[in-house]
Image 1 (cartoon, each protein chain N blue to C red):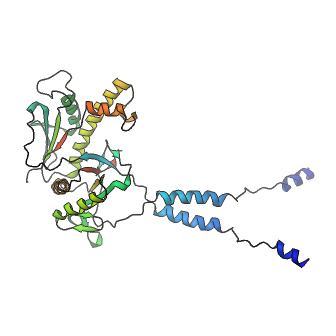
Image 2 (image 1 turned 120 degrees about the vertical axis):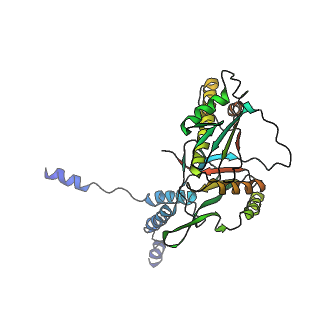
Image 3 (image 1 turned 90 degrees about the vertical axis):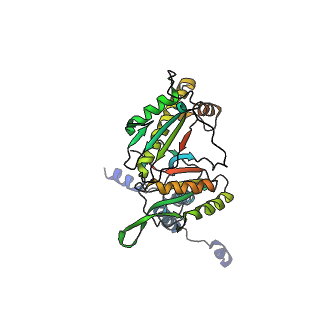
Length: 180
Length: 148
């Protein structure tokens, strides 16, 4: 009789406060977490040249963008507003009518951005954003025509994406700024 | 009528809560996995600029940050524009080269994320970029917020 009673008494840890402990930890992590997405404009800097003269670039293949300290823009020596830069770049790179003053082919086109040392950073980023926007638009149109889907819908590193990327390679040159 | 009432009272009302710890643990594990504890104490003030055509960096492990902005002084005052890498302010910009080169040796696919205050001048960014070029860390990313 005594033996039987002892066997029934099962040793057990009280698990009812487990939820409270878990909640406490959960709240701690909720407070500490910063889900900040790393996003921005990606760029690949050119390597330092080893005293080799850069290959000559024909004038028509180069689009010069100059931004001064006041944030004013010169596009190929003519003043322009930031808002019209995108269209100008698209025309320049694509050159559908084979204008002799614009680039020979999208492959040859180089967009060069030059700033002053005192140019505000946000103006520079706005400028770069426009250039990226122009290329995105060109790639989107090309992708739409060829595959019927926007560029962003193509799979990363797929053959199709590579093809579009080869059609419109981003050739952006960040010139060293003038001392100002 | 009375009988009907009594019957209703007999049925159990509460929601079973025995599965709650499991649910909470699942959430807990999710947050533990996704949490990136802030690894550096920012000593410069950064007001991000906005841009439209941005791309996300998926592999956070590859990213190394360079912060550029006005130094935070006591009492909410702002000082000169300074460069911060990890936990230290850089006095001599020339030392960026060695720091970044060492990081590149550890992680060959390094992406340098430049977190720059919107009002800084571009000159200092150029200096930093020159150093990055010397260090062969060529993949960079200008950190921005999405334009609304």
